[in-house]
Structures are given as C-alpha cells and as structure tokens.
Image (cartoon, rainbow over all chains, first blue to last red; front, side, top):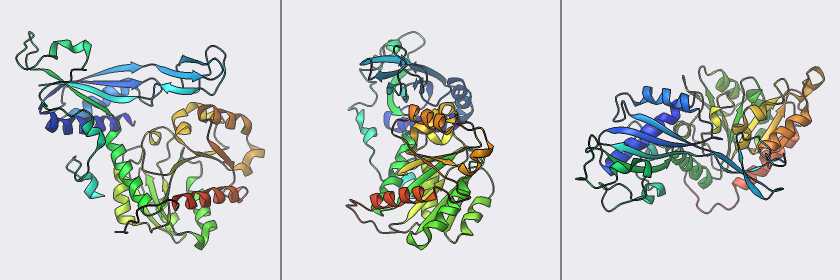
Length: 113
Length: 283
C-alpha cells in the first residue's frame, strides 16, 4: 500500500528536478530497488501509472533494477548474498547477519524531452 | 512547518538541501557523464541524433525515493532537538494495545512529565478522545486511505499541537506493521509493540519494522497463561532481525513490568535534554 506514497515521492522529486534540469516531459524513470527493501515492484508499477496521471510523468515507463541483498558474516569473514532480512549465512547458517546492500530505494535517472 | 514544505505547492522553500547540490552542473542541459551505459544513445549533447531518440536525453536524479519525506523528518527532528523534546513513534498491528499502553503510561508519568500525543488513524477521533480524557493535549490525524503517518503530516500536527519545550511527544502511528517502517517522522526512536495474542513469528514476517525499531514491547503478558506464545522464540526472532533491539515485557492492563518502560522513557527524556546547543523558541 505504501507504494502509492513512494510513487508520490518519486513524482514530487522528478517534478522538482524538472525546473532545475529543464525538462517538461518524462518518458522513462529508472529506479534502483534493493531486494531487502519494503517495495514490491509490481505494486510500484501499478501505483506509478495512477499517480503519474496529469503530471509531466503521465504515460512514463517505470524501469526497476533490483539490487541483490548482501550481508557480512562475522563467522566466515565473508560477504554473502541473502534474499531475506532474516536469512542466516548460506555458508555456515550463522545469524544475525550485518546487511551491506539491498536496502536501496533510489531514483537513478529519468529519460526526458 | 509551512516554511519547510510550502504546503500545497509541492516545493520546498527556504531550505538548502545537501542532496540537491551533490550533482550540480554548470550546464544543466548536459546529462551526467557518469550516466548509464544501458542508455548510451542519449549521452551526447543536443545535436547528436539517434533515430527516434533525438528529442530525448538522460537526466541523472540519484536521490532516495524517500528523500522528500526525509527532508520533512529532518526538519521535525531539528525542531524537537532545539526544544529538548523526546519524540517517540509507536507502531504495532491493529489491536496490540498501543492506545491502552499510552493512556496507562500518561497516567503513570503523571505530573512528572509534560506529555502530548499525535494520534494517527485512518478514520475517527476515538483514540485522540481517549487520550484527551487523561488530561493531555492530543491531536488526531486521519490519514483517510493512507496507511501510515509521514514527516509532512507530523510537521503540520506540531504547528497545531505546539508541544512544550522539554516535553515528551508520543506519536501513535496507524496500526500497521508494514508501511510505517519506511517513513521517518523525525522521532528519537520507533517503539514496536507486539502483544502475546499475536503470532510469535511476527518479527520475521514483518522484518522491516523490527529492524527499524529501537525498542520492542511485548504487551499483554498477563494473558500468557491462556495463549500459545513462545516468548523466547519471539525475542530470538526480533534479535535476529535487529541484534541491538531492546525488549521489554509488560502488561499495560495489570501494570506488570510497566516500571521498566517508564524508566526507559525517563532515560530517553534525559538524553533528549542533553547536549542541546541551540535553544529554540516555541512558536
């Protein structure tokens, strides 16, 4: 549900940048979403279309790059890939893990006219 | 907080935002040269034509999706800090007992602390009415269809509520363990409340919230004899998500364990009043 608010945040930020970086129509928005973040990509795409209406982002395509989750295992002394926040180390099953990557929710760039 | 949000105009006035300057350019019409290989057709300056793409260009944004909310939250946090106000964001599922915990807490703190409350619910002012009945200031935010409070809403509530310098502000978020996790309100700590009538595996099911919280309160412990709830397992799950989380067990109804929670509040009140460099004026 909060994807709707997140999309409002995206639109607000992209519209604000339209003034600074001088563009008037957005064709594509590229996001970087971490696997461990609280965002569901499909819900995001659905919400985006609705929220973008009557803005300079209307009809824009939302592209989402998923960033894999990575965490540090203090037992193995190694960075390993994890899929959930509660995952233990895939090598030795130890937890808790120190999360290093996968929290991201970023607007990377927009393709504009 | 209208000076911060310029409400209704979807622009931020009167503030400089670090992030806005990270990627400043002399020529704003030029895209970043570190822009992205998968769109190299648009990397050239105006005049470099690629069939069908000649009007397009890439503009780097490089901002957190939550950056707008975070700006509002930072403004709130600064406002609290200047006034030595302890702000706590209480989150839980619906029915975990937030409002009862809050009313009992207010009664127990009594005249030792000045308290005010922001109540977030989708509809009704029932909770704010319950809080006001204890004699403290409360303001209700109805989020309508929204599932969480955000930094902007709280900023406006502060304008109206005007919490006193050195006071404690409880923000009772919308009952929801998902969405409020991502939205910083400017609070000192998120306090997540879980009751023993819920599943012990909630920390694993809703990891974002337990990761974001500094304190977990296990409420309704008076009901433990009647329910199948593994306290140890629940605490282990919570620490698996968030190794530093503090856990208190209590029953707001019987008062059992409440003193630990009140101590935690008092310690944090002291912390909020320590090291304040700039004394703001309540306005």
